[in-house]
Image 1: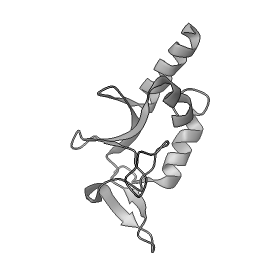
Image 2: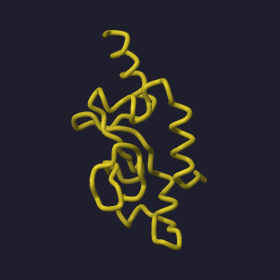
Image 3: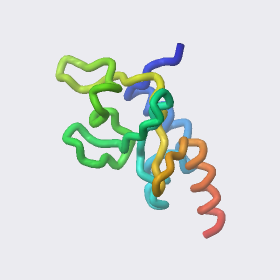
Length: 111
């Protein structure tokens, strides 16, 4: 069984990809938008804040109700479906963190 995706899990992922192009701050200048892919359904969700505005980083607060599994006492999501993968959207395509990191690294070398 896969672990649920949590804020802490997103922070760990970001730490693992820091400096490699697989984090929002490094991918955004190349046009990548933080997003989530539901591997179960194939749906892609752009990262949004609690008010629904586009978020500059991976944020579970704006994900739709059908993927939220746990909330804290204030009602903020604390865990979402394990089938959600954090990554990026560029154009109409979803890229995993690994794929985005490879592309961003290649763009850095080319410039």
